[in-house]
Image (cartoon, rainbow, N blue to C red; front, side, top):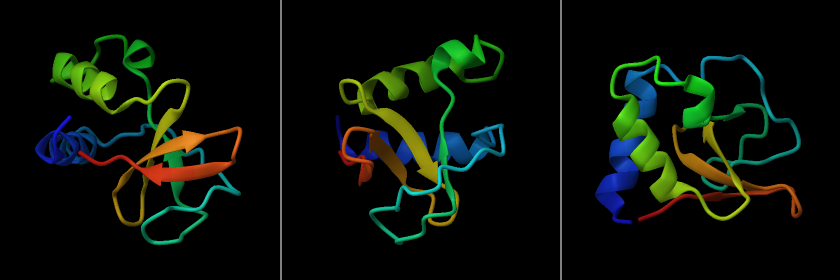
Length: 96
């Protein structure tokens, strides 16, 4: 994965107004800005079920960014895509 792919994913998340739910993950701190009250899980492509424009590109970028069993999230403060490791209760920045 390249940096441009991560940046495209960030832009797509913003363009599509994702996540579409208001749930926030408390106790997980953003690795970039340090906020712990703005982290929201991103919908998996399966949850979106092809119901949005650019679904195929979202699914492709999701797969490129996903690491093993970690879940993908976004910090709604700084906009960075994060990989959530529940075993460590930590978030790391998805980079290219």
